[in-house]
Length: 199
Ligand SMILES: C[S@@+](CC[C@H](N)C(=O)[O-])C[C@H]1O[C@@H](n2cnc3c(N)ncnc32)[C@H](O)[C@@H]1O
View 1 (spheres, rainbow, N blue to C red):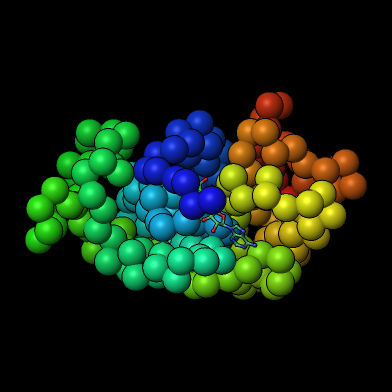
View 2 (cartoon, rainbow, N blue to C red):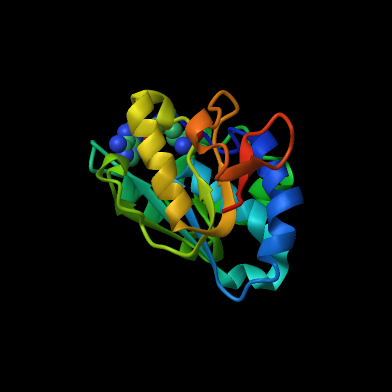
């Protein structure tokens, strides 16, 4: 269930870079929710892309990473930001060299403090239908909703809608917007995995 890796979905990261970051740059505070973040590669990959493209404005970014975390281990792994070599193979070389350094443990690497400080983890069950906060600018929920029933998916996406402040929702490519909710979101590009809240 917790399968994930760094830069798993480069296409979504590029869409966020091209379509979301220009708008985020105009905000004083930027709140992002990574719902179903597993042990951290996804929120950290996003943080690195934001840092690369936002410069000093990145200090206004807060990524609220949550997961049901049945292992009860993710909080510790994410706060330490230390990952073994085999989990970081796909990171672009320039990003790896900039944001990782060797950890004390052999063959492990630690993420830079600036990136680590932008991500905080809370245990959270999406099916409780309580947003991590309101006034969000971007929600990332990838490879999680497919595990839910259709009715649950609709309720969770409605909760995302309420929690967004006219911002963006990114899902995996195979996860289409349920017809009941199409009027609440518009696809940012035609083959959408990125939606903008419209009402
Ligand atoms: C396949 S991983 C996806 C990780 C990451 N989003 C990605 O795409 O690489 C699915 C994650 O969803 C989490 N999950 C499953 N049910 C959940 C729920 N009800 N609330 C929150 N997270 C949940 C699992 O614990 C797991 O970490």
